[in-house]
Image (cartoon, rainbow, N blue to C red):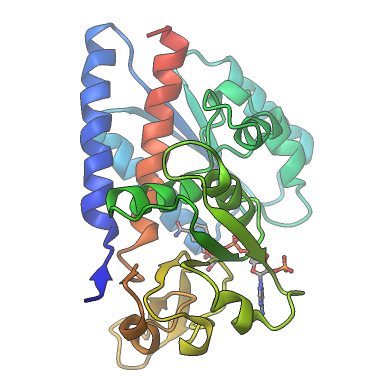
Length: 294
Ligand code: NAP
């Protein structure tokens, strides 16, 4: 029997933990605060920022949205970050990526106080991730994927995980998490990318296959071993004249063609995407707790 790993109930469990932590912090006189910086007017980025803001409000957190035009200079953007670093009401800072134009993302991320880097992309936090030091913040989408595996009772110990995609935001960070020695780790991880040769023969060796590519329906039945677990990180909008909006979201996995071969699979939408914001909220509440010394 194939198991559908839905993001909603797992994200709800994370939110319940967040609420319990939040109440403790509030009782001790601390209000977690998240600042999201949006540069330019990309509709997808705006939609993501809107969902983050709504979730902060639902949880009763302090939330600040800072919008800047696409022609902001690198120095002006650094000044925004420095102001947020100095703001005691802000515990988490997230710069919505990608940044438009020639803005240098790495330079911006380097300026975020690592203790407020709830997106987990500062080199200090990525270094801690590589060192198996759990005092840092892990990037939200990879930690959401790991949490889905844990909550679904899928033991990663000794399993061969193949991750297709090597971005820092997803593939590379997830590899570090899954090969780490903590809960939901101890896997043997292979990371594939656009230069990998004979990808299907590699992915067919995976007990757990993760797709983080950005190409709709890229992973088909030829890529998947019978009984594998498939985690689809992809979020791609494709045209669909039968849909109300004329388009719909699909993953990097051809779900209909692959699901029958899997022991478990995440859907898109309704899978990993649900987890990213939940892990962001959890990281922000933890940042507040750590600053409060609780
Ligand atoms: P990205 O930075 O564009 O990275 C894509 C990766 O896929 C790269 O490593 C690339 O290889 C690899 N790739 C591209 N074509 C390939 C091919 N033909 N064969 C093998 N590998 C190939 O994308 P990303 O930020 O990691 O995002 C990946 C997907 O996840 C996107 O659909 C994105 O929308 C989605 N996403 C979802 C969430 C969520 O909350 N669920 C969060 C973030 C991203 P090279 O490095 O060699 O170019």
